[in-house]
Length: 346
Ligand code: DP6
Image (cartoon, rainbow, N blue to C red; front, side, top):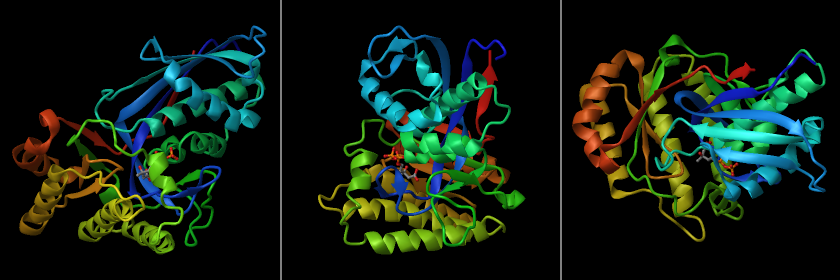
């Protein structure tokens, strides 16, 4: 093996347009989803390998987050290593030194599991390739490993648009790994995502619990069918240049995600009053000025404002004048569609 001391991966977060909501064991989505990867919201992870001292433990690792030991994260990493062990047997003969940091502030309310799990998966699989002297990395394996860490992470291994989950309408789509969406027009190739931080607090109900509540949900089957249809529609929309059609579908997906939460048992609400105020302003602006701007939501109160780069001046002017006042401490993060993972081998 060529001399390698450290493998570093920068991996982006992503924002879903058709939402993954509901899963079966182990990490199999109940419907397909599609997202685009971001540029600025990312995790940088470095992995070094040391000789394993025979501690008797199955996995040996040290985990640092932003330079500090984080024992709280250990159970999650152990569970992840257990799930991906068959892909990285040679790596797991070593003691792993994992050092991870996020580009976005800790308490921003931005989920980091997609970027964190995809960055770690890429580092570990790159190490396995080196240790076994192989030439080519199979990105499907990286996506599959990422999925086993966090479902949405499966999509973060690609730049641009990625879809994950079996779609009746798209050959090659798979429940175990994401694939890149190759066909889209130039109109959708430079989408911007301005994340309005309405509430930076910890979510009241985690995504894991939310996914679980889809089991036995009265509208689950209808929702899964709808996601299949919306995915097919969005793939067609992305080939054209009709922003209104795009907005209609993306906003309906976001509201449906929250409708599922509001109609589960127990029910819960992650919106804040300011979330709704912002949504209404965006819709009014689109209708009155014909500005191509729309929103989507994660499983939280923050609003992602999406628009093509061609209208960035008008859109940012509107956001700064009319929307930022609804954010906690006026905070927002500007981001845009990105090119995917970046790996450095040292
Ligand atoms: C609302 O990927 O965070 O962001 O698989 O349990 O880690 P786990 O869930 P996670 O769920 C994300 C849900 C979502 C929609 C999406 O990204 O598609």
